[in-house]
Length: 383
Image (tube, rainbow, N blue to C red):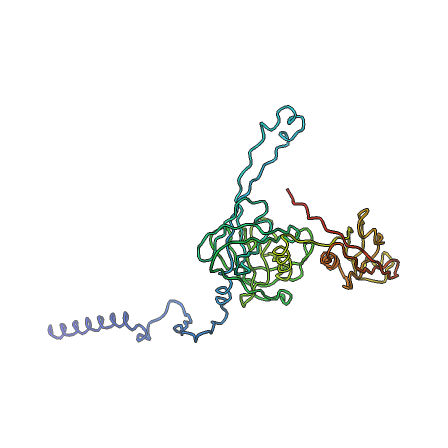
């Protein structure tokens, strides 16, 4: 009896040892073993053929565009105002002995390499008034840069570096961008390093006159944070369609509404800056508002499109050309005008000094005028 008991104990021990080994090496063989939770597991990753991409991944687009996006670090001198020290009486007696010394401020942003010879497109507010600019490239090199030109009206600027091995970005077609298109925002937010965020185009043709009177923005929910300014908004092919420039926020941080300057506008501004160092725009000297059905009805007008003249500067090209208050501008230099944005852009694109035909509606009668375009003064910078 004792011998049988010993054999039974040995058999149980061997069986338990075998189960333990199998559970470690081949747990799938233990079909009776229950899982903690039922899950669906994918198979092993299969290598893809050369040139193929994984579905729902935008790594190829990011890989193509990220070498063209740089970090821009600049310093500027800021003088804080003190009402007491700026009082004329105080200055008369004490002069500048009590003036507050300027404060050094660090400006951080992003930029996009647009050519192999070192031109970089960024935002005006990133490099405006700076004394020193350092550009950090994708490969980690840091090189000095200089400002080529600024355009406060569109918040665009061009800087240039001298370096080898630059990767210029490929320009896309921003005019073909549609609501719902997937986009990637690339930049260096909070100076943590290059970051790629994804979202969709929330709106196109978004007009924010105070920010950019000559262009309409691409709105996106791709995360844009401080430091992303001047960075790239690219499509799923890695092509540049916009320059990230501002956000709508009540907290100062990202809240799901960001705006980019369409590359079609950025390209025109960039070419003028590189060619002449500045952007020259035509000027009429009028303030206009959108014509709409309600306004047309109240004025007894039959036309419901155009830009109605609300103010005319004395001695301006518009006044000299015969434009009057209440006129509705419907055509400038052969281009139809349906709203304020089209009117401003049509005027801005005419070289100063050129006389252009202008059609207006005055008391429901169409009149043909001729206006010699003046030169638009740069928009004053906010303090």
